[in-house]
Length: 238
Image (tube, rainbow, N blue to C red; front, top):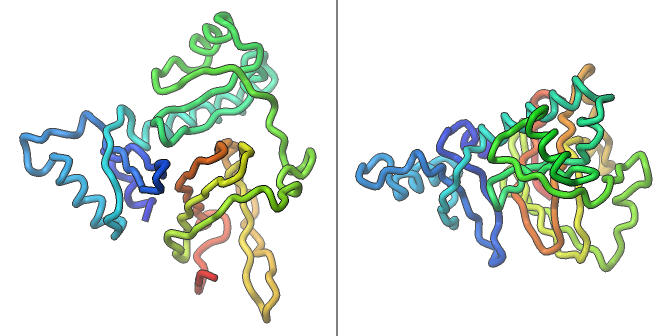
């Protein structure tokens, strides 16, 4: 579903609003209400035909999903090429903030000098908002961040669509905690009532992109396993 929508230059991303409704962004530069094929209603019909879902609201955005992800790729490449350089080490995490159609970059030692350094040496795009770091993200290897979930912490995951190559899910954070998580994932199959992890292909690299899920928020997230595990022979939702 999402993979087909994301191929369109007019698509600016999506999020779940406070009322629980799906909101889909259309890039402003593609809208011309004087023409029937580029009006908001026309794009709404196009999206409906792609996702086969009608309960969503259209809002206007400045940047396409392609542009946002291209910039994220540039940030990843810079971090990999300059992993030991001071400017790269001062970048804590960066992520697409779906609801605001922009990229957030958290910087350590946040000040005018650091912002200027980032703009000069890394990326000067207006789609990036540079903010003060809220602290280093703990990862699974450091302290098993997600193992401390208890009865007071509720993050609901609702599948929207499962195919043989990908899954689209709503992540709804009902807890009082903010979460950051990455793109890495595992797949399991149910074999004789026992869940077993599927082996992934060798030499597969997963993008080191942080996804932020603040308390009380929801996001739509797609996981594509075609390049990590191949096409599954059968899928089901339990």
